[in-house]
Image 1 (cartoon, rainbow, N blue to C red):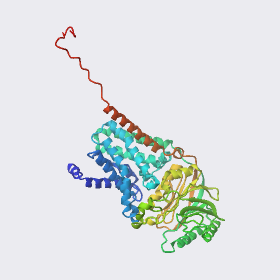
Image 2 (image 1 turned 90 degrees about the horizontal axis):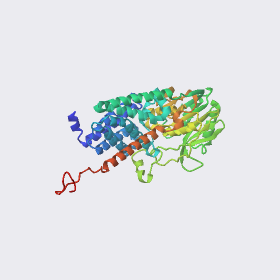
Image 3 (image 1 turned 180 degrees about the horizontal axis):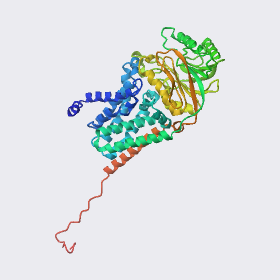
Image 4 (image 1 turned 135 degrees about the horizontal axis):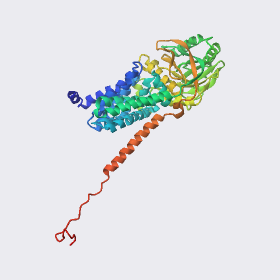
Length: 524
């Protein structure tokens, strides 16, 4: 063990180990999907950081761990961004530097029971704040939040309805901290056990208390997934394939048909012939069709990605323009400075335009649906707002064909389970090339996935639910709680620093006696 510690004395070797330790959580996400590994995946990084000789070195370890984490969960972007993905991981990895410092502050050396207990609240709170900051759309969005690794765990989905993916991330980190203390800090093992017991008790209580969605009716929604279409005429060929698959749905008593992102590569105002063909499909199948148009608009300048509802008489007028664009993929932040990214990867040659508001659409059969486009499904607040606005079914139209042979399609499809569980509303994840999936109001998968090899249309019988989940009602309260914990800790540290700097009372010194004074009669 001493020899390994000596080997880690090299800053470069230590940084490499921290990056590798930070990358371990990727195994808890799809495609490996080792969900149970999430509860111990941070232990190696925490143990490494607590052994840092200084606070500065601990912050550096946290930074390197964040770099490894981000690079691992976004590794599928490498073919598109090339070296730029490393720069992004370096910059955003710095968010974990304060968290690394906190780990050493609470667990370094020989922490007593008090510090061990405090760590179970402060360290998960610090991690949650890191996830909050990096979830800003301008920094890439909330892809790969640690709590989303629990998308297929029934009790975790119930907890998501209480506090969203934020609550799951907090609990997962708290368990990791407890395990790290158990294996490396003998003085704080009892608090660690108490923390695990308290976490299990609180989790069980929330699981029992959290309301279950009340099923109230069913709808039949079909997903059309054309599969990979290559070649110069890919847009027309894809449309023809979607048309063919949609015709096969005639007579299936459908309420809605959903096509994937960029399923129509031409503005319907410029191509009324396509609008007529989609309307004919709607009449033939007896259901409205939600398509996604990725094109330069005819009624305003710029390129938009838009969910457009088409009925038997043509476009209904319901349209949602994508609001949160993928950095570098759909626009380049600070293009005047970072425009060179187009020369080293597949960054956007022209920025797409943003929509201004979310939309709830009324489908022809009286169904209210809330569309999102692509990675907007990763944002908990967007699905929450749609549920508040009355959406009965959440829909995400996506396309991950660029990353067809990576873990990205499975990761993206799994996110929808969390959004369904958080809102108590079923969610349809429809893609061009897979993976397409549907989840019920509690986050449980309905039917089978349409994988990346499939070119098919599939019908899903989807239960509807009524009622409001605690997460929809109260929002991101775990984040507010984490900020409060950190604020209280900072205030206590500030008060402690003031007490240490304040001079204490001067010691009492008896007056000195002169040679003329008598012990029996002082002053004489």
